[in-house]
Image 1: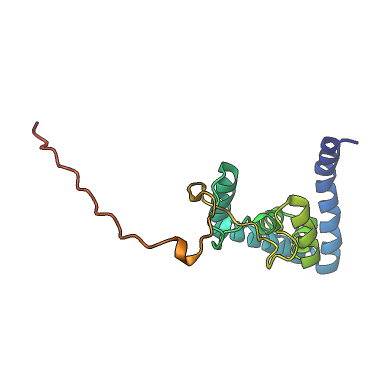
Image 2 (image 1 turned 180 degrees about the vertical axis):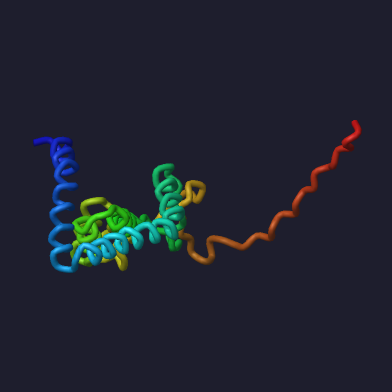
Length: 165
């Protein structure tokens, strides 16, 4: 079966599964308790997306446009935390459970490998993939006797034009 058919089947069955999960949780905690839990989970996801979403979107735009930050930068591709926040924002207990599972380190490592957001083996951080600025060019490593510090060039002032002419 092709992936498109699996996606369609999943999107059709997800509301039914969420309804069954809501009925089970409401049997355990009551309807009002289940509603509060549902609203709290979605509210947490929306709050996370509201606070961090614009930066994540800028990171994705930079990634898609080919602009990468310097190797020492703190900016990383936030695929897994963003996925968890989106799953939390979608109302439902199954999506909230999936968001919590995504944040488990072993599941996160496998998702990083699947999505290609993980670093090379032995990297200090799963989101080791750093971005480089396109104008940075290739890195050239020189010995101390092969380079020297040059003084800053003086700025040239532009001649102002008379606005009356």
